[in-house]
Amino acid sequence: MEAIAQRLVGRRALVTGAGSGIGRATAQRLAAEGAAVFCVDLNQEGAEETRGQIEAAGGQAGAVGCDVRQPSDCEASVAAAIAAFGGIDLLCNIAGVLHFDHTEELSDEVWDRVLGVNLTGMFYMSRAALPHLRDRGAAIVNLASLAGIQAVPFAAAYCASKGGAVMLTKSLAVEYAKTGPRVNCICPGGIATPMVAAVTFPEGADPAVSAHVSPRMDTVGKPEEVAALVAYLGSDEARYVTGSAFTIDGGQGA
Image 1: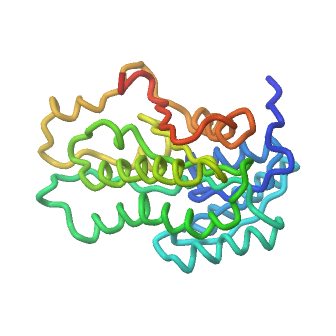
Image 2: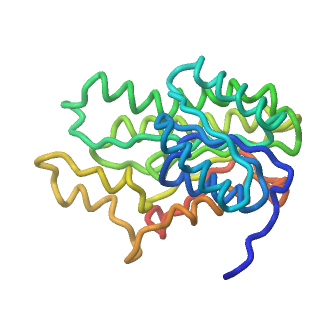
Image 3: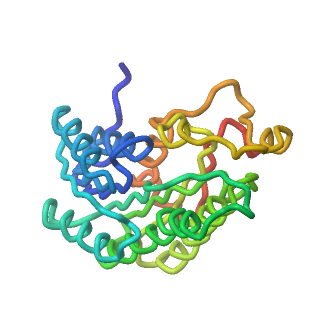
């Protein structure tokens, strides 16, 4: 097995959405590279399971339940991570939800939930963490989506939230360029996660329109591949990288 670089030794990371999918893979990769990782998820059981896996592998981790749509939850999560590790050097906003529907049938509740988790929650968590990240070596990595830079049918709320995530990333990056943290986002295409597996196109969706989101390659991406990019962006190897949106999509958006 190829040895994993130890680029994050001494770093303290907070990862949202750490209970499954890309969030779990990210928490595990950061820990494997030497970071102490605080696992945050709405599903506290999932976050605790990730924490246990990291500790079983010899890493240092903590966990807490958090609804990123609630500012108080985000503030409490940051405070808990600082209490556990003495500070934060890396914030990874990975929590997200995905929903496909005909736009005229999209409910207020679903719109609010998708925007709340994917965009507003990212803002709340960043706002809570920023006072503790004012350092040139600190970083924020946000999970956006290819849907944030390329239109996806039947995904008005998702596209709006992920497009907002891209621009939130860029705005923070230029605001904090002189002081830190560096702020970047990742825009995956199709990744094999439980969230993606659970989603279907709405009834009556035109197959020709749905084909617009088909991957170019014969396979989908792995959460671990996205996690590897997160680890790079959180490390000193990416010291000159900020305000960027990285696609990892098998050429889907090319």
